Length: 167
Figure 1 (tube, rainbow, N blue to C red):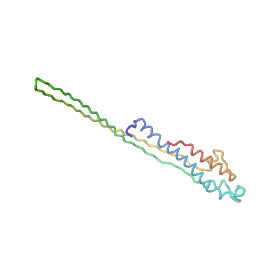
Figure 2: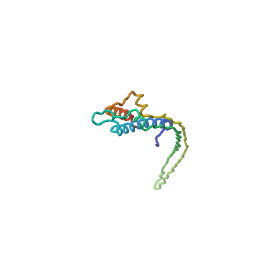
Figure 3: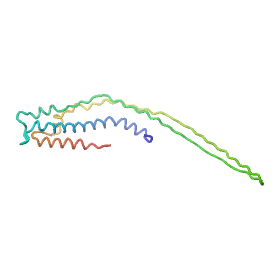
Figure 4: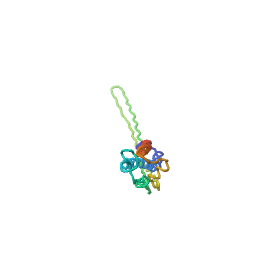
């Protein structure tokens, strides 16, 4: 972190909560895909892939995990910025008169330091609303009527979740 700029720190401070919310959404999709895979055998006949008699698919979808995230996020950072300057110099010389020789060296060293602190803080009120699988499928025009529909929806949810670039 020694080469981190103040600009990159401020950018990260404000981007981190939003990136976390997007990653959380991708994880919700993966969880729903796992849930649908788990529930598939409880909803559909293995022989023909049609719903088991008496099973209301819409009612089963309403039992999927519902996520509602609300909260405050407080982020802060303190950076110590230090500067050290060092200056060195020397002068040497000699004098010779006949068989007599004299020499000397004069040296100088100077050091100075400067230190300061940089502090930044941000507060976020984060709400990603209520996440409901049945509502999500409806908004994205995904329907489940047969076992193959479950496979199709699981594939689409997994693909969408995996499109999130990793940093």
